[in-house]
Image 1: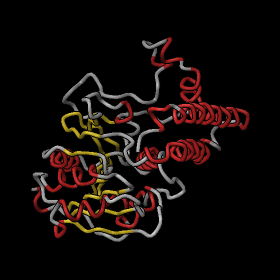
Image 2 (image 1 turned 90 degrees about the vertical axis):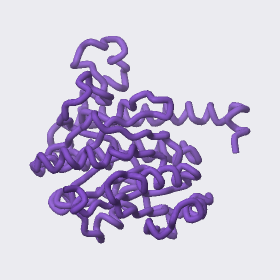
Image 3 (image 1 turned 60 degrees about the vertical axis):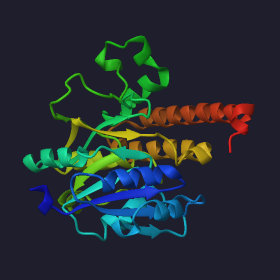
Image 4 (image 1 turned 120 degrees about the horizontal axis):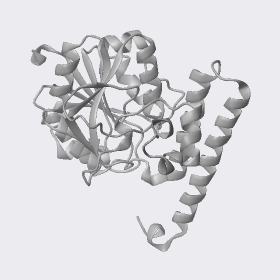
Length: 300
């Protein structure tokens, strides 16, 4: 049945190096036919040249931007112009198991209310990434994270982090508030109804935004633990961690303003913004300190 579906895989690349070849190769080897697009955000490394030399270029379509347009805008270049039953959004540092796309779409075909889905996302060492299954951040959960309360009260749901990781049930499909943008499968009809990714996010938080809009549009977001991908997290962002830190926290402020500004009193929102600012400065200071270490500075 899946052979009759148009499935478009979409990889946005920025300096992913040899990981881009590994990611695209894993998609080519999928057990369902995929139309593969690679959108390059003006990489300064040789990842696109390596890709052309490393795989059959006739099996993929490469779009090379003249500037770094960001994750959301680059994805939208394809989402807005290509007609497809399903889109598979894949980070260039993700390797997808052969049966992963088929497993996820099979579940989505059987439940027409599912508009967006993902699966277990593992680090290169096999650990499950906590961000693959999430609750939406709220003013309360943001405070819990800033104060680190989940460490002190790990058994209390009220103090849980909004990054949840893998559930205890290994096989049952779960409907969650949000999934990770590192790997997402979305129905074409969902894109038409919910809209494209919000390009005001340069990178980070656009996945939370899309999940929120899916739920508000009447679609469910599914986490499918029977399927897996491996994500070598942060490959594209390693070249400029300060910039990534900036866009992450800027995106979070935009998310809170967009969805909670009218729901919570202004003093609470200012506390939220202040907390995000404190986390941004603290992480920025840590990254600056790390950059001064000889072992870090000597890396190419």
